[in-house]
Image (cartoon, rainbow, N blue to C red; front, side, top):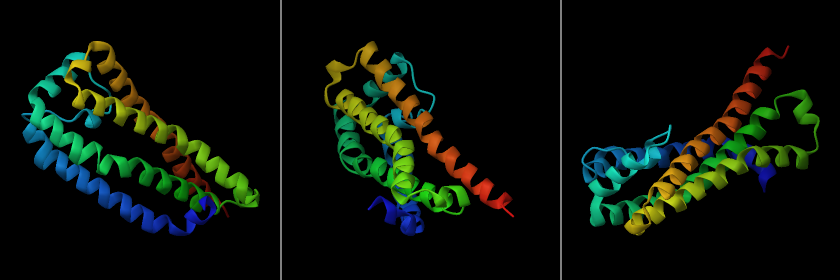
Length: 179
């Protein structure tokens, strides 16, 4: 199955961008209103302090927390990490196959290479989603340690996403330099 993903890279990119646009629109048009204009924890690429996390949770209140939990973490953010991961794997395979050395590798090795690059991001994203969902569903679990852990997972998620992104960019550049 992984080996066939490169054929569907364009469709996966379109689907991923569509879900991302919906999630971003919900963030700016709805979720920020619930929190008094504060960005969601997911949008804080560099992480957040425990005080910032508590301020967001407090501003949301019970109703806002439930809305974000249902409309973000139990819907779109269940789908998005898997969809983005499949898209990244497909792009690694599609761009890598333009290179003679990568194309010469056995198909199973290509698939394993792509999966190993993307899987850490996928796991970190779902772990971060669980951590933030727990904070939203159980306000009493929000303490400096749990907030710091969620913040570290958010930073880790984005750092790990940069790895396959960098590989895809490198493959594209190497394919362009090829005679």
